[in-house]
Image 1 (cartoon, rainbow, N blue to C red):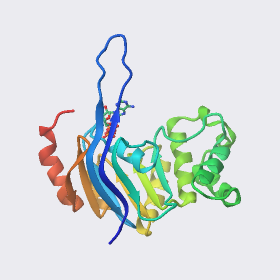
Image 2 (image 1 turned 180 degrees about the vertical axis):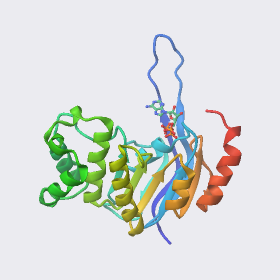
Image 3 (image 1 turned 120 degrees about the vertical axis):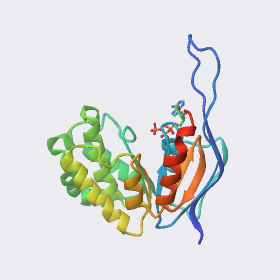
Length: 237
Ligand SMILES: Nc1ncnc2c1ncn2[C@@H]1O[C@H](COP(=O)(O)OP(=O)(O)OP(=O)(O)O)[C@@H](O)[C@H]1O
């Protein structure tokens, strides 16, 4: 089987600004020597401790961050990848509706396609009048509602979900989990980060354990979760 996405020896380095208190120029390699193949239609779970590189990997896959080493290849052109993550994505001065349309257009959908779906997005989001307010007035949960609702209607080829299941209030969490499950049962490619191994076991067909920007274990989610639980304590941030 040809992978949809191939990461070949990928490295990404953060170079924080020097401050007056810390004069050393520190490089942080969030990903290094990372080799990963993601197959069309698969549900891949990522587990790992805080700071192991999960969110960075998602941002690389989404094309938000460029890489410093290695290669990232897609098996075909125009693969639309959408990242659902707190704190990523919207233009603060535009309204929810404007952001929804813009986001869809950035994903390669036409304005007409998005306008046809805008009522559905508004309704799913449950944002009420806030849908017509600038996004800078939103709480983080409201931001997430908008992100979810847009992603459900832009139909990306690859949906990246960064630790957002179960976030938001109870009603929306249940609604979004149901919508995500529907995507999970379709042939869409989904990559999911969760600190909860049970969620990964329940929803994914394959999992990887990431540690210091590299893959330590890969395969059946139950087995990878087991290795992570028995082995993670020996690593330090
Ligand atoms: N903007 C940044 N500038 C400098 N270093 C960063 C930046 N963002 C992340 N890092 C560093 O890169 C490494 C990977 O961070 P990342 O956020 O990808 O981890 P994570 O696995 O998603 O963590 P968590 O589970 O806590 O969300 C960490 O060492 C972190 O300190």
